[in-house]
Length: 192
Length: 344
Image (cartoon, rainbow over all chains, first blue to last red; front, side, top):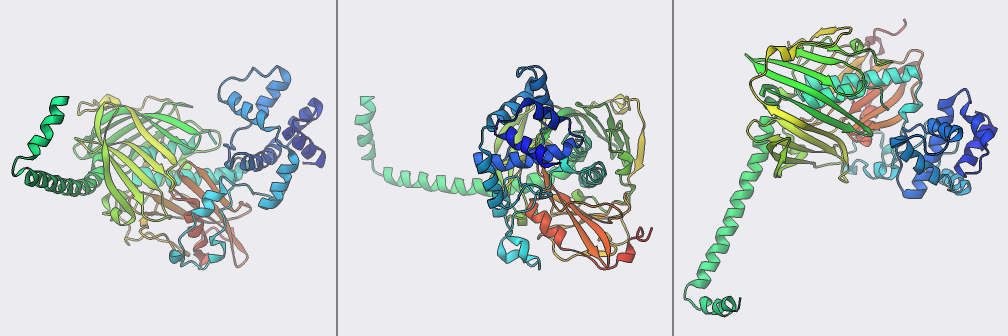
């Protein structure tokens, strides 16, 4: 993704992007790249704004396209409500956002950064007396989060196979019955 | 009203009255003591019933399952007859499909969901002993108590709270139907009380009158059939060929060794929660390092280099991200030749 597109994204967050550049962004060949960049920035913004993160698995591009093509009232249901949230949040100043990005330590372009309530995860650290592991260096650090939607097809297939296999241990093997099956089917669903 | 006010002091003048009051207070205390005793006994009593009830109760119903932003519902019929479990599950959302199980024979009719073929994932055995048949000292890792009564899907239930005693695991709440012990609702929550995963029957009928026709496959599609081997592996502990875990959270013991992929997978359980560890040669792929969470389920991915050969280490389970990371970081590949796929 080139700098011009990143600028557009940044301008969108500031609610200052013109329609032409937004259209160009939406027709960018690597939509997932655009999406993950957008989501990273959104997460930073959410983190500053509300202290926690909104769900990051929502692809707003369809909603934005709708808004460009037709009008804001089109997409009903959850997408609309998510979009409303996003739109409101576009007014967040980009300067502040970038400042936080530096403070938190993940600059734009860093690979798999991002965090879902990193503070909680950090605080949930293992008690010191139980740390027999020699990896004590990473102990206090927040666990780095990987956005599943950022995985390519091959990676996703690998991960979903693990999810399913684990779910399978839980259902038949674990005698957990329906809960295990639910995890299994949920894991095999097209969601995420 | 005034009558009572004037009479009360008069009554307290009756000799022996203070003694009576003292006695009743004492009785109250004793009763309370006795009550809390039965309550703690009850939690264990209910936990003992949980496992058998899941298999040996016959019922039909619909349950919902929510984790993260996903909600799915399934229709289920479950019968226990002549020592054989029969089950039919039909997902109510998304594409058509079903899972039918008779004893250890499982048939899945699930259309291709796009990217996943289920036949890759149904383990062809051998399964080590099921978790449920192991007597796990759940109370060592969870503070268990009866947390009241409720009514779910028309049935009287008892609520069990199992609060994790450390930060290595999540807390669980279980609702069991009173006459059978059947699990009708469960929550998994983090240490700060956030519910991460939710399972609940929305309609339920516990009945022994389930006909054979309720366990017949009705969906058209590719049928995938697997026999789940029940025989135990020669050693009670599953094999971890070529790798070891140098640390694992207290209470989690190896539980099953399913073999389906080319890699090495081992499952661990503390009686309530479970996680699986996968170690595989990486081949041409690159995986990011870090954790993803879907409800209570954490996936921690990591790449490990041993003598110029890359391995994927993946931990999947209903455990907090910090625990999953510690487990992943405790994997040591000590014999890379044990991985057959190397060099291909």
